[in-house]
Image (cartoon, rainbow, N blue to C red; front, side, top):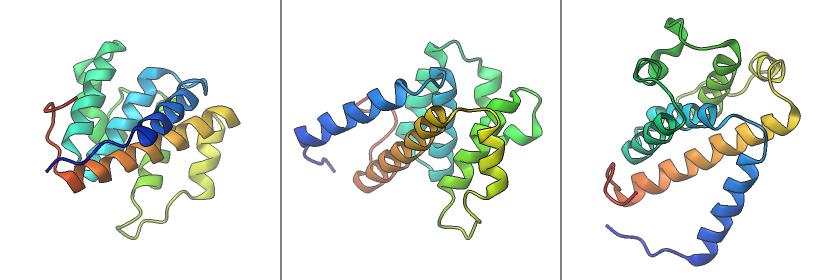
Length: 145
């Protein structure tokens, strides 16, 4: 399947990325957030892209392989854990999870400014957007980007 690319959508996505990357969150952490949401949604092209981006930011294989089980590993900082927990809570909307509770939000707010939280929420949302597009058009990892 191949979907037509709308130039207005491309422009809008570029503006969203600009907003995300100007929010003060480290690019490597944004890659980990993208990876975790994409793992949850089973989006192979986004998993592939986020691993590639994270490696370009200097991320290690050990940590990348452990994102799926971040709670059970010693490899992530408290800040990263708060971002990954926020990612999971905001992404798992179909399986009856509670969503972003006050406790999860407060933990994230302990580590991030309002601007950074906005960037994280936008990154999580945009990742979920791309995950759904890729699943709809059956995009394969590494095929086009």
